[in-house]
Length: 245
Image (tube, rainbow, N blue to C red):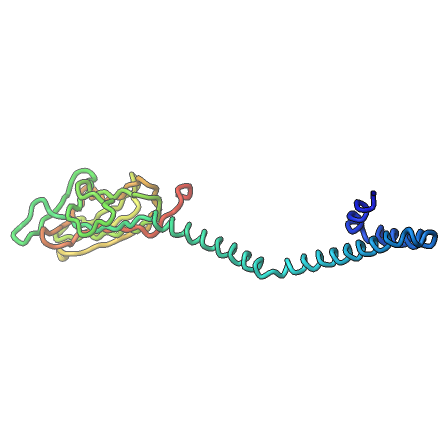
């Protein structure tokens, strides 16, 4: 009665064990040919099935490695990785800020043609360029004349001063927070009563840093109520991570 169980388990045995069983079966058959004949057939069939099954498994593994669906899955995985990187780039792009401004100085007192001088003063004085030409992002204040960095980044600033005055010192200075970073200067002699002077700087700013123009003590500049002569401009070049500022 134990034969069915033994028969079912034979095809799971290793090949060496199977060969050993075959030898033992032949020996037993010589002794009892009639009794073992059915068992011999069963063993041979089971061993054949086991070898065939083992061969099929090897073939299946080989086919699996060449399965076009596996290749397709690998390609899709790579594509998903690329899409994730693109989404991250888009997210950073969506979080970017557009910043640019230009403003012009206006005189508090003007002549018939709209010209007027600012200064000289006994102390350094902040210049307020109150006429807005461009103010993308609203980071420049026409009330204070200061630019406040809305994000960590690298910015470019340029400024121009105009003078129409004899025997006078003209020029302005660019400040970052409390530090002077650039200056234009010229002394107007008797034979030179009109001139322009310009300068600029690239600054790496943290969010909240301020940039503004200062009229040094004893200096003066000229502006016009209808023309943009003395100007202040700046824009964001690119953002940087906070820890890199």
